[in-house]
Length: 380
Image (cartoon, rainbow, N blue to C red; front, side, top):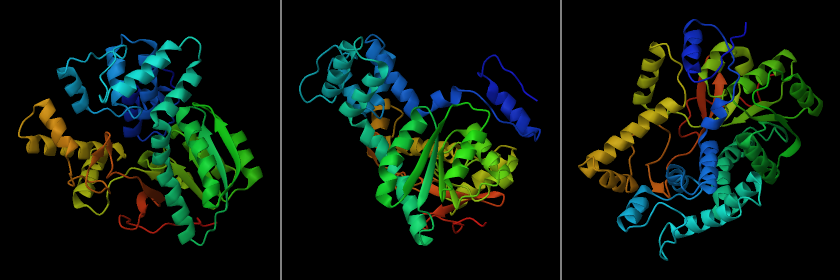
């Protein structure tokens, strides 16, 4: 059965109803792609470049991974009388001087460059390419360690990715970095989002016969790929996902359990050793909801903010921002070190490796946080 919706604005209500009724489903549509932080940030900066009068887009651009300007710096600039307008020239030494200069130049040449060329220049001039790459290197380092600990059973890889910014960017990163870690890339296969048939992708994987398949896709596409591979009896030594929409998702485990078995992911997850985390998970599941990675993240963020307000002794925005900037908060339920912000990024945060084992999702790496040992290579 197909349910056709004119818009996806309240699709979450339908998803929840189907889940509550125990009816398996796959959501096809594009809104989740644009909700990803790296995609929304890129769109925000391109909006600011196109329209210097869009103060909301400019603010979001300055706070994004592309420029990393803190709220404290923005507040200080405002008190010093500097307008939120990159056509102004800030004094030397201002944290807004370089961002404004980059945006002015990209705006000036916006009509003689395409959006893709403008975006490439933005990545190069801001250093965001390196920041985003560094986020992607941790999953590959974890993969190399898991493979080494297992006796290096995996030597060949096929990359499968959605053809948008998220998937294409990760694929390029892995094409550059995996050979340095001793892996041979046999093929890189792109697919559109949404897609309703993974048969051709599965046939290409079969023809290459890789040790590993590394997918970078959203929920519907990866669930479909995993089911198609199961139906066609394509069984690589491992499936290693990176920030995948399904691989660390209990909905996937429940609806397509056989296809989900032994799939590994590198993603953010709760610390299974912490009683508070497990108690929260049980509370969420008792309410009939699926436990997802964003729940412990949001719970920890609220704790971080409450800690900052308490240390600031005030709800004043500037004081709270100052307290956050000096944070060493360790009361979260994530497998992180103490929270410490550098250019707006939490240096204490890092993804872990999970694996579907039976009806559960286990943390398998790093060993300091693991509640199960990895099953790799997976059983034939």
